[in-house]
Image (cartoon, rainbow, N blue to C red; front, side, top):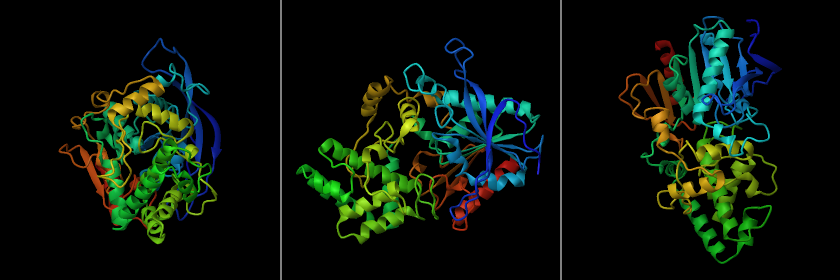
Length: 473
């Protein structure tokens, strides 16, 4: 085993050894948690001068061939970086084969990487939460690390899933002198094209449930119809009771929030439709979409079945919640697919109001959900009221990556057909420098998870292709 890395530019806080979990598809490795001094503003020399913040970095060097082995770099996305460390086992599966150093970097304004602790979200500070600043953080970090580790000749391969996959692709496109290649899984980069349709997400969720059971979608529609009739009569007590709400609904505004809470659960179950149990977003069984459908089908009362199906996400497989607090478990925001809660939810809400264009709401016709629209006009009004900003949807296509992919190279885009984000991803290209992988039976960035006996053959082949791409690159 190689000696531990001595990171001159980092302040080592502690080393945390984590258990390798068997059965949930994990290959969780121990890591060293460190902090790197990043400039608060990379692009304006006057705004904050030399002010810095501590960016959280996780590393593992036990496989690294010093001075020659590659650096596998995970571009952290919208959450604490340790959550992605624990759910990106593919990197650890292949790192020994390539003699790689593994680095996971946390995104500014998430987890412990707060530029303004306790004051991140005032109007002066939150403007520094941009994709460009995050990419610059990663570029500066890598440049400094490679120099301090005498690794200037070591190629860097970026990995990322979902928004992190978008970032890994952007890193290769914007910083080709630093990033040799990228693996971008479930990366809906076309959403940043203002002309690209935003209707795919809830259509795909509906299709996932229909494919799990041909009668499932009908039961969902029936339950929502009964609920709407009940709510129109003002009988919120019955609905509250059937959904085991901690606080009874009192009006149609609160009822609408319940509908959003339910829709969020179904979208999340579709994303996490893995072939084995996981606890990434929730403690879920294998194929949770099929499980949720079984709840809907086994109950005589379709509303009760809908309650149980939604509860699967919020309460998990063997949850202990006796009631649901829908106002703390789901926060309405500028992302109809859900922002999450706490500071991470607020940060993503701001990004959804500025650079990150996201799917629209539901219409009840092309999907199985109630009519809950989120048009561009609704988004603009919300964002100006909440953050004092107006989205600039054309900026990403100009600044981050040319969406016809001209000039891009050494990027692998992988998407699974069970993933509701697939419709915003790269599914074909005429660019010979771009590799596209379509994974039959794959949910949200399944290919980045650790190998599991329950994996479909398609994801096993996808990982082979991803490794070959590195060898060929």
